[in-house]
Length: 565
Ligand code: HC0
Ligand code: SF4
Image (tube, rainbow, N blue to C red):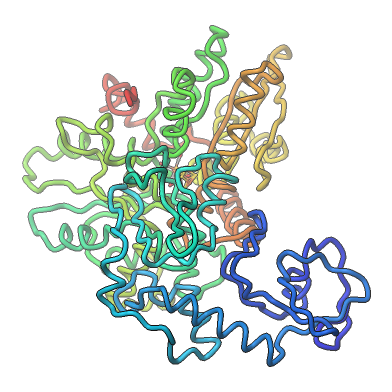
């Protein structure tokens, strides 16, 4: 086809938009994500053909012989009108909006030179129009900033099979909200935050816990201990213009020390503990042959999904706390035991790629004597904001090493951040042959890759047992798998579920990542795993010493949980 007078070949592209973008022209969109269905609502991606007809390029398939233009005077005029109409009913508190600098509407307004808005309303009218829904521990909904693109609705229903939000009312009153405009916290929302990840404006934003972290850091009576999740290190650099997928963990440690955190540790350490506890639980179930499959429990959005939609399966969800929570409970207990004289209060701050971890940390079941095991959860972007606010030039930092002992981890704990990682880590523990070659060969078992559903068999060394394993990411894929299990169409021994498509590398708290970015992040985690000295959780010497010490009698109390919704 011809684009702006130049011949552009196309192959499998499903719409003109993808062909145009492949040709290096960034057509604007507000409602298009290649991983969601096409909605065609915003019309920003319009193109003009040789007859002067206008087409929405996202919903028009490419054809041989087609001639289109992407930036004619007519298109420019239409795009500006569309933006002015959107802005006419959009509040314009840009300087105080948490999406300031990261908002597609703001970005396109600048790009298309919108310097005045007709049909203006008073600021007061904007502010009073819809109430802000602040009920969720993970996200805040501000319908006054919604442009009705429907991205969040499609993400929530198509990808996640949750359907907590949808369009309501008609015409001028049209809005996106939960059924009966209930507070989000009272719906089936699982807190995965994927709606906020695709929201082009500030209509759905992630709860900002940065002020609480500053307050703790500035309080001299508090010992502020941080844990950094596996997936954060391969995404945070993007916020400072570094290469996508680069592992910047040593710079994160340096930045966090400068910010004022007292100790900086790695959640991958606790993931090693999870591997040990979860594998023991799995082998026990396998021996008894009941209550299978064992479902993983480290993704809190998945746990909430099961509680909401399949409560009868909760007995099959591992009782292991997630690594975030294992870290929190262990850290607090360990400190109390080993430093009885220190009267500072320990505040555990997690840095997570995830919004659901904020909700998880607040759960009653994950408190000890009424105090949360994890006190504050920052997202990757939240930490980037703190670094930025501190004036730290991230790229120029000297790399620093984690604090010890909770900064020691194996590669098995590190790969938790990508879909299939938990499974691969468990397999590394299950197999008897721990040689380098054997550990390396597990990567071919079928657990790796960004496909939403992966199923494979693993023959064990006893020559008899063949494990049937499934790895899914995206709750819609999990639902399909559950239906197959329930109808007995399929049987599995072990099932890993992560709510975000691709796993935590694509968590909603990360700089937004489509497929290519996810691939780079996954690659970086696997490369870092390969470089670690310790490849399986049992090799972590700190873990062994904990089992001989504090965990000798308290492993169940500190590392397991029984949810009662
Ligand atoms: Fe994940 Fe985790 S790997 S959930 O995906 O299991 O958030 O990165 O920290 O807890 O370790 C998120 C990421 C974690 C936890 C770990 C697990
Ligand atoms: Fe959070 Fe990871 Fe689950 Fe996404 S997959 S909701 S980032 S724990």
